[in-house]
Amino acid sequence: MGRAVQESAVAVAGIAGLAFGNLDRAVAARDAGIRLPILLYPTCLPETAPFLERHDFMPTVSTVDEVAAWSRQAKSLAVYLKLDAGYTDAQIASCLAAFDAIASAGIGAPIRMVSNSAMGQQR
Picture (cartoon, rainbow, N blue to C red):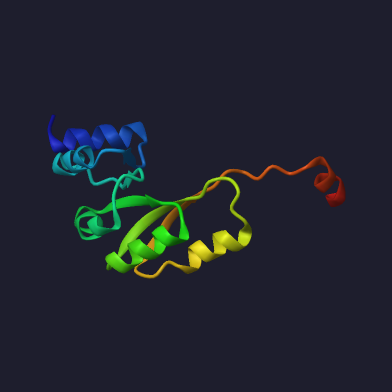
């Protein structure tokens, strides 16, 4: 399939980006001419930052330590910050404050469960 046909098919399908758990497949997509944003599941180490920057890939990070490690390795890199349940507002703020050479391209966090008593206090 030609590059123009691939890009047209992607545009018609309304696809805004791709995600891969395998770096080789992400590279194959770039080599095929796909220029959409590509998110990488958390399978890459911070030392791969220069490679990811060259290919315009977005790694997933999920802790303050990971944000700091990626910031030390990257010059300019967009990342996706994935936070698991249990993070407090202060911990989330700490993750965001740790960004230096990297920029948050998205944040994913579970919706907090609100107790019935807390809901009653809001009325």
